[in-house]
Image 1 (tube, rainbow, N blue to C red):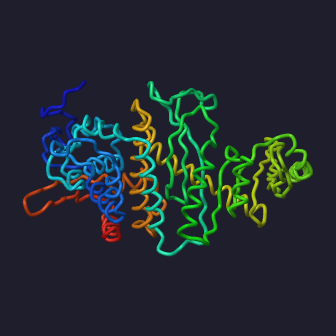
Image 2: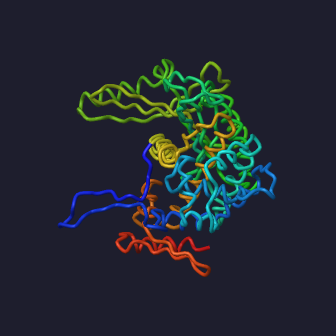
Image 3: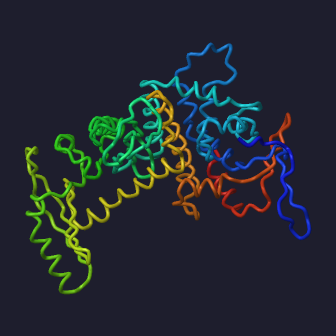
Length: 437
């Protein structure tokens, strides 16, 4: 392993000048924007302070140098700024920018301390943090919403060790967990870690029930729509929605009976393609009941035919409206949720579930989720109308958080002297103003 020291590193000359690099610049940060904006978003939501209040802490408090809130902020802010590993904190704990964000003026917790902090998590921790995520979502509305669309989806979280609950998944062809996510628009509601040896819809019914009852208690008249792919097309789940006045629009897997009922529309699409040579998309509705269903339900049929052949799709729903509009504008919009999951997995490291204990890994998933909530709050509250209004987390991090600067800290002030060549200065001022508590 390379031993970093203060010796000079020579690079090719520039205009006859020697180019030398040394790690002795002092109090310089690469995260001037990240430390300031994540701190501001957190205080605006009062998020991590409330989370810290419900986390377990079995330590003898008189011997503790780092409290739960500071460790939670240290870990979540670092994830938001792009530092996924605990080992990063061996040096990051000395960065004055993140110390300022955490409200400290000394070295922060070491990676072993943070590891012990994560391993204290249990089932109750996961439940309480999810309750606070739900409360934060509710508080984001100034007025009761007329409609909420709840997107459910599962994804694979690949594992490489001997973690508790790891199993081989035949579809993904590797050992993994199978976390369940629930989003409403861009806002996260649930990130629930599950083993991969289960049905992809397992526990989704219970989570939907809890969410619906929670929303109806606060907003009795809100219209709730459950949206998911064919993995969530379960008779009992759809039946529960019908009994509790919850609308649904859910994909349903192709089968011979569906094809037979939709054959006339499929043939029409094929005939039109042969006649025109252009891609055809025809929409209609049929009624259908699987053998396990007690009633027939309405199914939207998309009969598509291209040069590659027929490609029908089916969606079961209890919503009224034009079939093409329901399919194109409502059902297909669930693809945006997949982008949000990618942000979690790729940009905020929700797949770093390398702890041995199950609930420590669930807690890591929640740490990533809390980081997502803060970055999404910056996007939702401070970036509307700007060039980054629909930017993903990685772009927001690159353009708003990764700003080099010198930090001068004394008894009266902490000054961030940011790069004079920073190209998004006006945007920086706009975000700072909008996030002001």
